[in-house]
Amino acid sequence: MLGKSYIPCLRWKKGEYLAIEQLSSLAHNYILPLIEVAEIGFDFEKRKENKSIDEHLNLFAKRIKGKWGTDKCFIDPRIINSTVRMKNGDHPVTYIFNDLRAYDINALPVAGVDRDAKYLNAVHEIIEADKRGLCIRIGLEEATEPNFLRNLDDLIHGISIKLENCDFVLDLGAPPNFEPITEFANLIETVIKDLPHLNYWRSFGILGTSFPSSLGGIKSGVSLLPRKEWILYKELVQSLQKSNVRIPSFGDYVINHPDVVYLDMRIIKPKANVRYTLGDCWLLARGKNVRDFGLGQHKDLCNLIINHHEFYGASFSTADKYIQDCAQGNVSTGNLTTWRRIGTNHHIELVARDAANLAAS
Image 1 (cartoon, rainbow, N blue to C red):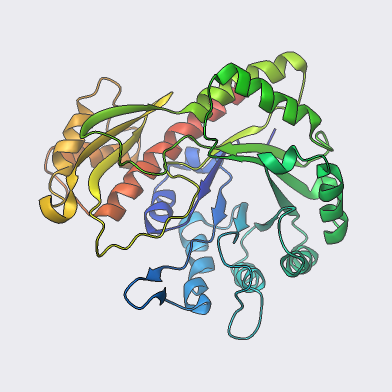
Image 2 (image 1 turned 60 degrees about the vertical axis):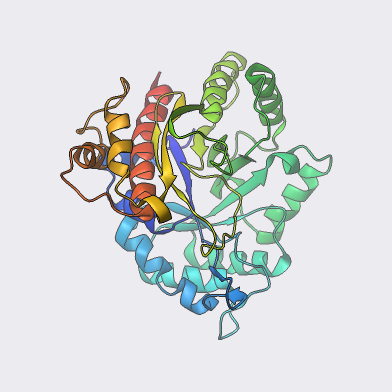
């Protein structure tokens, strides 16, 4: 088991890092975030990225320190184009960790069998400098390939790191179909049992989501979507306990889909929505597009949530208090970033506690 019971994978955009900053100390202590470097925005009018890599990474480490602190975290720049270099020629991951080191942040780089040689060389230098270890992130398809053991050992030997200094994350991504859940759990159990060096990793976690890539098919009003990754995980824990096999910590993509989608906001009309996590499902309160109908409709959406019988109450998290205050007209209806912050903060508070309780049972 990981010392932490929950691994939220975060894209580290404004709504997410503000949500992290507002976590309770209890939730903060239960989580070990896997922080991805967000994509560089794209200017559709000029048909190019809207900033340089130097500009994009300029405040990254400072925000980690300000919003998360210096506690352990995994840092993964997988989304950044592998050919991009800083103005001075450095690899972006080298720049990131030089900056993180200056803030004394206990950050570990993430690597996998799919990373190129120059990235792995840079990671090797980071590990040698920091002596903190490595997070190995492996996709489900990679873990089931016939030559996976050789690829994994090549990675470990190439970076020159001991197994006991590696944290291992099995990343399911967003499987197209979790069902039937029991059969899928059996498949994942088999994959876990076959993982090389399973009992030697410093820590072991599993990551995945069933959150949709688009809410386009979700009706207005209130809808419930099953959190299939959490349902799967609970079944998986029971099976692994019976088999006396190492149990991974739970991880998810919070209220996101892992795929990066570039949207031209000149033509997109996003709809107002509040994403509210419950035990085995998400409650989605959805309105009309904010461009034509404004952000004021979030007050009505918040009323739908606080009147739902499973609302956790204003004292549960900073997000829940905001939802209740918004429903009562005591705070602003904010903007789209506000509601990403609210959904993320509530989700992490809830899942951190649920995962910790399950680990202790």
